[in-house]
Length: 461
Image (cartoon, rainbow, N blue to C red; front, side, top):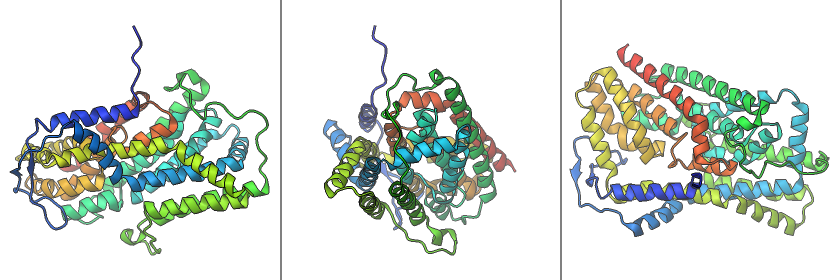
């Protein structure tokens, strides 16, 4: 008998599309009336004409999801092109060799330093999609240091993920949800700050412990035996860190620093710094220009620069497809008008509950909702206007409902195949989905128990 082999991310996503399409034949169609801001109005749910999705809709949903994610997909391709030029110059190889040589015996400290940096981005401005640019940069660094691809993926994903789990002033999740709940961003800040510290510390400990095991015994890696494009170091002498390559690395770092600064909403956070408000189209242009400038600085010909850019973009084309197809699940549910029905069931299940029971049920409700609606801002818009009024009858503050929402949404996005960032990160690291499950399930259980305990205790107090 042949040993079972986990299907690719593409197959998993299409299977989920089929399952959701089947569910649209079972779940009744219905809608809420909505405000001008798109928020559903409690008590207005009503049945509508059913529109179950068929085989043709499944195929089209994948394309419509890709159209909806085209800005992210193009950004990924531009990052790939940018990295392609960098690899052609030899600057990345020379830089990695220099880093490993300087950190000899102390490579493990890269893990807490980088995870803390990513977590600060996650808790402050919801750094999530933006992390896609860092995976192809950091995975080879960690593999060259004697770790595995999972370590590189986890440093970025769990670093930013822990920050989003404990979002303190994140305007895209906490800010939007607080607005719909009728509370200020500062309400509930103390609890969210505690969650941030606890989750970040737990994530760093978990990744460092795993990385230490892998370095001591590579056979203990959850991806042991799986080929990776970074698995085999280049043969021969490493490239020298020349003046031109140093300049290329400086431009390389500058591009990433500009990206991080440009997406932080300083105005919404009350920070007295000019907010650029860039998003994926402008960021795509940033990486395109960065690639061209690096090619000029390193003396690459026009033909070689163009060829390297196109080849780098082609390397990440599969990731761009995954990000687009993962959006198709939301498209199917919206077209079939079953999203509001699921919310209505949750609304009915929560009525008349005590405070701590209510908040735990809210948290548990958000877990499946986050699978179906992986966008935190979209989920906040759809659900908070319905659940916040119910919370007032149960004696639960709007800020606590916001915390339950953001914690559940961020937790699910670390594991659900409907999360475009997760599936893209695993594709970049060549990490099969089932191996990621094997790596992370214990940490998810810790997060789940801790969050439930903090929420229940806050509701009682």
